[in-house]
Image (cartoon, one colour):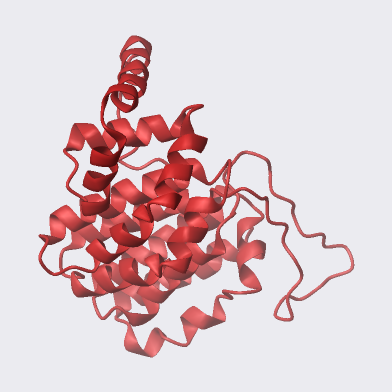
Length: 260
């Protein structure tokens, strides 16, 4: 589930090559100030958003990142996510676009993800989800996209023993498998956790549990990486407020976690 519908766009190798060339040409020929102003306002056309995301993956990305930081694009973008003047579906597209850029840049540098955090970006997305929790498709797409943000970051995180773990003499904490699917961004996971805690919508809570389940099963180390800060007991505390569907999802999550 790591690649979502928004990421898994099927293109042939020839199409991908042409698209990358288009991305470089787009940045070379398009006025950067105009481009970033559009990005900051969140009004890029769909094809332009794809080009920005693709260009951010390429070798030119340090210059792009420097420009985004200098012009405070992330801070302005987050402010626009909070706006009530933009249709929720358009805001959701803005969020997906931003998360793609954060995900793709964070393997090389933490600059953009740090700027996003300092701009209260996680809080802005959480508030948007809770305001629109009855739009299940919108919420689901954002939560699924967060899987890729959780598993991307500049530094690998090693699991540590927590006080809640029973430490048997023969047990050794698993290290990340090196597949690129281990947790590298615990703040992004914290966003999923907060959505589960604060949402009153059964479908949203069930989707959040599904996403956590996917993260746990992505890499054997993930449960242990997260347990210190986000133990399963925190989910249990909310069970009296959740319906039977969510409780069943949680029991399945608990069973999966303790069989890792």
